[in-house]
Structures are given as structure tokens and as C-alpha cells.
Length: 79
Image 1 (cartoon, rainbow, N blue to C red):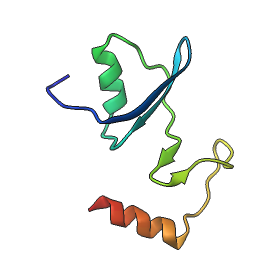
Image 2: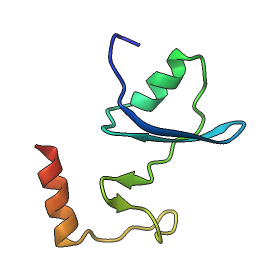
Image 3: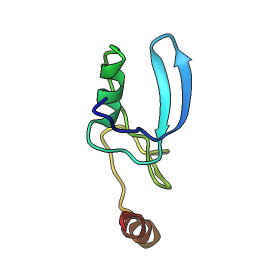
């Protein structure tokens, strides 16, 4: 896989063709590249959390504004 190390924090098989994967740091297309190297086709990918910010309680296609604390957290973790 291009000699890169992927930092998988946790992995859980949900069903025959569904997994829940948590990365310490996600890079562009990292999950697709990882599974492609194992000859596994990714047909759907859904981000459910960035840091402490989750999509819990948000309907598909909807959004909410971030709190000031969430914005601070994002900028803090960028460094």
C-alpha cells in the first residue's frame, strides 16, 4: 500500500459486507485505498465523526452549526 502505515484505531465487522472502522487520522481516500489493496470494493463510505463531533441526531441531508467549543477543538487538532 505505497509503504504507508494506516493508523486503524478499531475495526468491527457489522455484517458480511459491512464494517465499522475508526482511524486515528483520516487522509484523502485512505479507506478506499486500504480496502482496494485487499481486493475489497468499497461501495459506500459514510463519515460519522470528526474528532468529538458526531452526526448523531442530524437527519440525512441536514446540517447544524458548530458550537464555538467545537470550532476551537477543530483548530486545536489541526496543529
